[in-house]
Image (cartoon, rainbow, N blue to C red; front, top):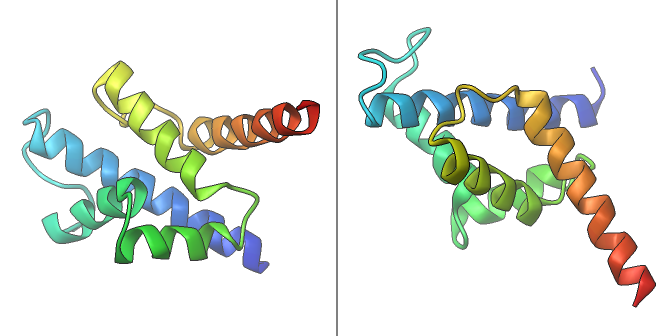
Length: 113
């Protein structure tokens, strides 16, 4: 496994944990999956959505090992949750691919200016 794949897997796990956290918090599920603790699940959410502090810096560092823009990742996750109320109905690949597409569009707009 190359380094980029490793960091992408970390992001994927954070999305999975955050989905479990939101579902548990909103009482859509009564237990967390696969022996995941509440702390681990909530840390996935914090990693993905923190706007500043340790979790935001961690997201920036980890996204630096991938093609994913950390701010776009945060924005996309928050938009999906706002729109659908959950991450559990979303394919992990869709979140990351959506972020990649948003990142490319951002750079196209900047280049056009």
